[in-house]
Image 1 (cartoon, helix red, strand yellow):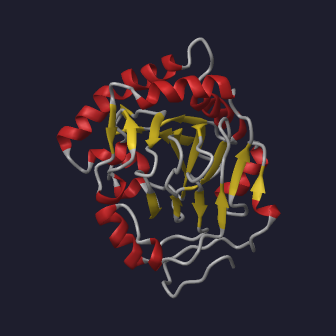
Image 2 (cartoon, one colour):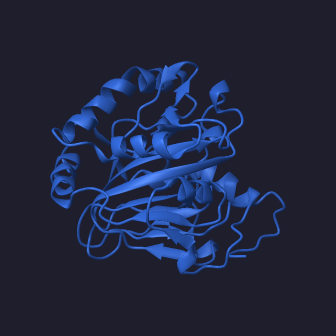
Image 3 (tube, helix red, strand yellow):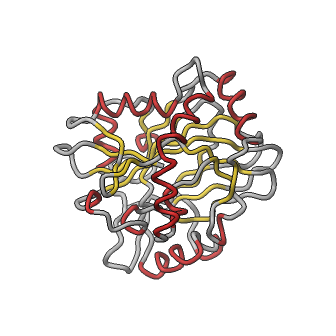
Length: 276
C-alpha cells in the first residue's frame, strides 16, 4: 500500500510507488488503468506547443474575467471564468454558472485560435479512448463550462492538500453512479521553483473530508508526505484521480498557469463526462 488509514471508508491505491506508477501516453489502456487506480497518473510531456502555451498564459494573467476561488485556503488562486465549485450550492450562482458555460468555453477556446485548445484535444482523446466515449457534463439538462484557466501568483498562491468530488457540489441526477473522478491539467507556464504537484494516492479520511469541505484544504503539517511530487514543464498534460488527496506548492519565481477539466467515470460501459 502507498498509504494506510484507520478510516474504513478511505480508498487507497494498491501499488507501491515506483516508475510503474505512471503512464506517458493517453491511451485506452492507460485511461482504464488510471480509473482503476492501478497507476498514479498519466503524464504526457509536450502535449501542447510551449510557444502557444506561453502566449495564452500571458493572456490569462491579465484576463478581464480573472477572479479567485471562494474558499479560505484557495482564495489566493486565480481562475478565469467561474468553475462549478464556486456555485457553492447557491441557486443564483448556479444559474449564473450554467448561463455562462458555453460562452465561457467558447471564449477560452478563442484564446488558442487558430490552434486547437489543449482541453479540446483532451476531449477528443477521451471520446476516442474510452469504450463508451465521452461527453460534456450537463446538470439538470444544462451544459457545464469546460476549460478553466488557473493562475497561481508568485509566492502567494497555494493549493493545500485537498480532493475534488462532484457529489459534494451538486445533487443533480446526472451524477448518480459516479465511481471515480479524474482531473486533466495542462500546464501553460511553470516557474523554475515551486508549483509542484503533490499526490498522496489515498482518499481523505472522514475527518479530513469535513475540513476540506469547510476551507478547501488541510494543514500540510497534519498530513504525511506525498507519495509523488511532480514538477511539470510547460506544455505537459497530467491526469490523476481528483478524489485522492493532492496539492500544489507555492510558485517561487513566476506565475504558474494551467488549464483544468474534471472527468467523471461511471465505468467503461458509460460515457465519461467532463466539466470545469
